[in-house]
Image 1 (cartoon, helix red, strand yellow):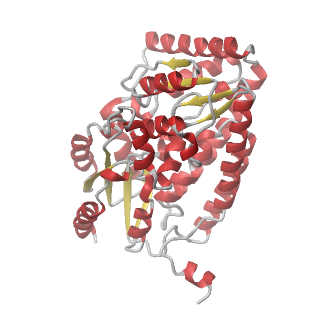
Image 2 (image 1 turned 90 degrees about the vertical axis):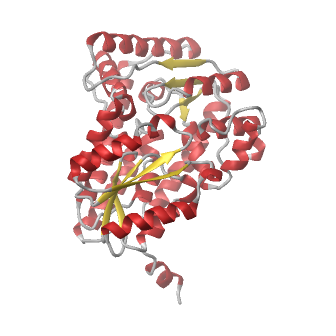
Image 3 (image 1 turned 45 degrees about the vertical axis):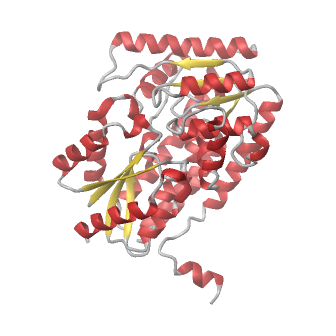
Length: 408
């Protein structure tokens, strides 16, 4: 049997643009190393307004993305152990643990150890752990920390809240300027914002294409291809990647080609994926289960566009304050229910991530509320995104099997 024939018999279809994705990842790594050597590298947290450091010509990297790579290499327990040997609890976020562990022993983590930062930019709109995490990295590397504080909001952001975050963004610009002796140029931030918006719009097109039957993308496809819109938005090569990506996705839709070969059940995924076992989705694909939507990748659809520096700062305040996890349980229930209805889904799987309290908090309650609102059933499985020691595959298989019996 030829290799091509064997590939054709897999229950899922591989994206051709994955080759471009690897090229972008390689480029991103080289640019980060160069920025660190030049003394202009910033570590930024997920949900941080990365357009600003990019517009001020800094290199940027995401420790959470490095954590995903460590998880995919299946060395999460080992690298977490380096942090635990320093006294950090296994209950701490596994992204934080592998970040601290890889910083402590970079030579032991060839893939996933980030270059030395010159500044650390943290936003607490997604997670409150980031400040103490970055304080630790600051002690280890000497890089100063800046926190952009975005208080949680309910539906609408009140004027005093907007003013507070607006001042925080201004202080961010002042902080970067004082550290690197540079200013935020109006033309530059406008250009970066436009590129960021273009990439985000393309990403949204790819996500919305999954409303079609069969869905052109599965969960694992989106978890991998979200990388550029997280780490490289605001750049031309990010837009170029998503132009190619969307073209492939829409070609699949045009020709009725699905991400999996025999779509029978359509489900929603809630939370960060288990990076150490993305094959979970491919195993389910062999049973006709596809995930046309998930709350995680849909969290990267915030669009920032402005016509001048002042309005762009206002857009930053609006967009990054309304990040999915900064808006409470009602917003989560609303989002899940909307995705289930818009994508015509048969049920949902909630991944209770042991070390991500912010994302997993309230899942038992929201599960019941979503079912009550949409009429479709859900199941909760437990584990961790990086640390495979707390992922019980047999237990998860039993729960998912019982759940699928209700649907098939």
